[in-house]
Image 1 (cartoon, rainbow, N blue to C red):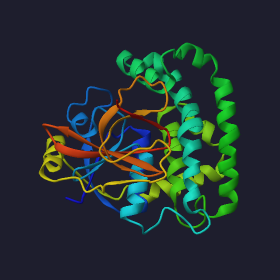
Image 2: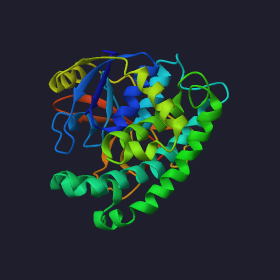
Image 3: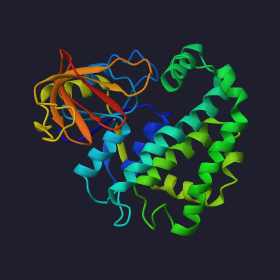
Length: 309
């Protein structure tokens, strides 16, 4: 029951980040394709209602958010490493830029320009999810020239780094920062009509993009969603019981907590019994008749933990 089960859909840019990570680590994994928008009836029992894509499952241990997924991959499969000796774990700081500021720029440009032709249900869902309750695609479209300028002013940093670093961002092997930037370039090229022309301004970036794409996604086999639920139900979570003794929120094993994205995205929180918490991640036990007991893991960065009274 230690095999990787990956819940995703092909057009998800964040899922592409993880799929490339499977390729870097040369992993085999099971692919469960999920809906692009809720309801997701064969995913929610595993995640306690968390709806974002992707989700990784290993037995009855569930990993939400790509940050949490990639950390767990490095922990379980340390070689080939996501780190170089020089970059080490400070590479995670890149994710706080690429998954927030840079992703927001890409998403605004792509979704605002595509919105007139998008299904209304999808448009409403993504607008609320990414841009908050007061999103206005028309206003974002009017701001696209500014957004393009902001995006270009930051992609040039990557292009200049690649012009001097070798085959990949930190040398001759693909590492964590390559996954953190590549998925955004993949998103821009594949979902924005002007994307290829825009990216052509960054020749080192385009050459690097082709090298990362050639890495592939490891080896995947299809799996039915119900089979993934059955696998979770057949085993128990192996996430250990532990809380950092210096936890600033005074968390303790066994207390009930609610975990939510630390922004107003309109998503419900995940409530469970605390099983694990250190400085980087948190895991809670959750029960559902379709899966039994699972341990749902999240990163600490970017999430709010509330002790339930």
